[in-house]
Length: 396
Image (cartoon, rainbow, N blue to C red; front, side):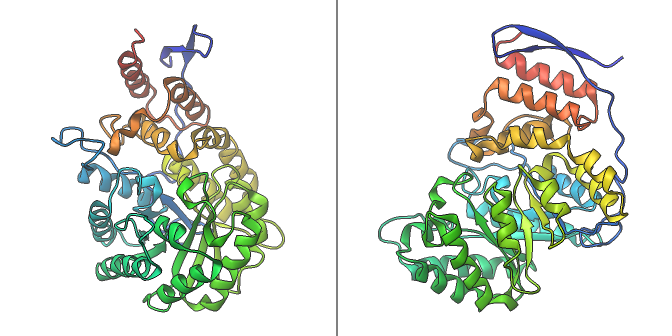
């Protein structure tokens, strides 16, 4: 018998909820290879991974990051064991929402080093300008120097780069030409082709108007021109606008050889599957939470079993849309909550105190949707841990 737990409802009542039988996912714990290694993936699949906070550190949590490095790297090994690559130190790791550049660099260094011990393991690491606070006095040259500092540090440890959008650049730029100047200067210097990350304002309000226009289609023209001018230095672009039509439009305009990585946590199964004119690879925060299902689905797709691909991923979409609902930037809370329920960390504490960013009812719904998608791997442990969270919120 599966455990039963009393859950609060939106109308102030309680309901008895019985958990589903746990699902054994094909490939869980198997060989690695996000770029067609041990798993039979026909898509590149990168999971933007969260960090595990250290709840015992004597710091002010809102001000000073404290990370449990062992648990954080162990979770990355879990992702690699499923054939997924890791997109490191990006917004899923609370970059700009609790994780500063100093700790981000240490995270990158540790992750890149750990990947060397797992043949086929892939890491791309976020490079930005977050050591530079946006202000009216910041110049384009300041932004370029900040990017250069981070690029030098990541390349020095052997890391591949995701070129993240810059809050400082969004504040300093006066026109699309300013974006062309900054990205041109940076791209001509990188040692290996990078993934450019266009992170929409729904993920970070400070990035509104990126590429010089509040109109995404106008901004797209600027972005495509910059990529076209430096296509030999661009592996691909990750688009995070939560709009499948805009992603398809961008994808069809990419220069030959430049990949598109979906960052659309609302529509990712359709975008990864693609159409007659192309498809998107994946660089997704939701892959942190649904890693076993993502791995099994991508393996099925690589074997030509499209029915299994859809059967696995379709139940994960309601969960993803719930976790990434507005305010989207708080999606990390649900990601870490599910990692806690599934035993990937011993506590539900986040860098910056972000465990408080979502309501109890939001977390309860995430639990139910994850269970319905077959993503609760130990029902007894998950029920006990959810019970502890309920008690903290005053629910007996």
